[in-house]
Length: 125
Image (cartoon, rainbow, N blue to C red):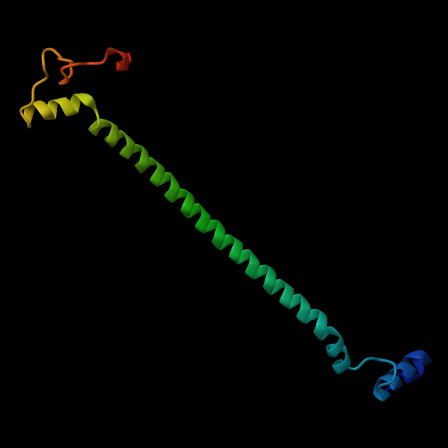
């Protein structure tokens, strides 16, 4: 068996003895203790970012659904306005009055008053 210890530098040998003594070099537990807080903070930060991103995506989807519903309701509102205009048409009303109610349009209009004495000063044009 060969002994290679004489070829290793003295500084390396002193470091290895210090590791076993635990003076200068950090142990694994100390290293984990020092890294635990930054790693935990990074994990919490990434979780918050992921959660906020998901929330924003969900709200964006809901907003798009609401926009689609608004467009649909605006189209329906325009159609309803056209239907109201059609139903309120004077020609339609006259046709219903003549056909269904038996009314007729007078040939001449008679304007007058039932009062025997009319005060002409009170009449405004």
